[in-house]
Every structure is written in C-alpha cells, then in structure tokens.
Image 1 (tube, rainbow, N blue to C red):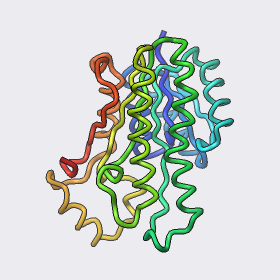
Image 2: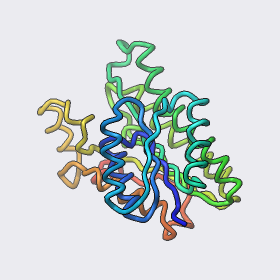
Image 3: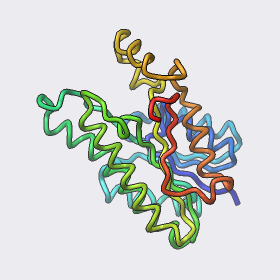
Length: 244
C-alpha cells in the first residue's frame, strides 16, 4: 500500500513543488490549503498526473482543533500519515519599531504555531505506527536574521528549535524530524520585491542565482526517503551558500 504524505501550504510555490515531487516518489498526497481552492485543485491534478491519489483539505493551520480534525480525516481517508511536511507560511514585513502587534502575531501563529499543531497531531498518529518522517520548512532568515522581518525570522528560528526538540522526543519510536532552510527562492512571495532589492540579494548568494522551488522539493524528498533514515534533528540549508 502506498504511503501518505501531508503538505501544508500545498496550493502553490514551494508547497506545490514538494507535493508533486512526493507524488513522483510514490506517495499519495494530502494537500492542505487555507484560501485558494482553485490553486489547491491544480496541485491535486498535478499529483494525480503522477499516478497517485491526491486530496485537498481546507484548514487554518494556526487553529489546533482544525489541524487535529484534518489529521484524523486524512488518516481515515488514506489509512495512515507517513510523512508530514510543515510548509505553510506567511510574511507581514516591516521594521521592528513600526511593526503592528497583529502582524507579529499573525506570522508567529501561522509559521510557528501551525508547525507545532501539525507536528503534534501527525506525530501522535506516527507514534502509534512507530514510524514517520516530519520535515519542517524553516528559512535562511531564521538562521541569519533579516532586517524588516523580525516576525518572520523569529518564527523560522522557532521552527528550528521545535524541530530539534521534537526530534529528540520522537526518535525512539522510529520518527525522524528535520528542517529545510531555503534561501531566496523564486516564488510569488519573492516576486513582489523591487529590482534593487533583488540585485542586492543576488550579491549575497555565492552561487549567484536564486533557488528554484524544485531545489527545496528535492531536499525534502531526500529527508523523507529510506536513504535519510539515520538523519534527525538537522537543518539542511538550501540557499546557494548564503549561510555557511
């Protein structure tokens, strides 16, 4: 029986690339989305084109009760949750002294609490299975910090701490927990940056190019594979050499 992977924020960008890559790897895929059902259905179709079963689930990842219900539904629909990819994330950029409290809270709630919610809910299912893979999408901003992103950097640094603590707690039951820290990847979130900002960012990347969503998907694919069975609690930077 095919294993099942859950991807939050799976409707577009990095999440879509991860979902499609895991379908290519032979996983059935549960795609979590919050706002754009049409985009989620596009991801579903791309996964089905790989010959796998895919379903979409609407959920506010920051709401624990919704996360718990969705995980139960996915387990019922597919029979198991074998891979959990916590990818859902938002930005509300602004300088620290001008940042609105609600913008700080919104980013922490989605990026960090959402990761906690699904790690806990999927992890509980994996504990009973005595097997599982959890991959959390952090960011180079969580390793280096980034001006104008105190909320985002804090949330992504928190994801790393959550990853390491979860890895220690779950390892004895055959569950690995790792993080991938993307650098600057060409997505809808980076398209809004000005040309001047993009040029400055490119100068900080030793490989002198932006990442592609497939670069992140390939890293996730490795971490959930049998080839990574002895790797846990690690942060894999996929950033063209920004963080060394």
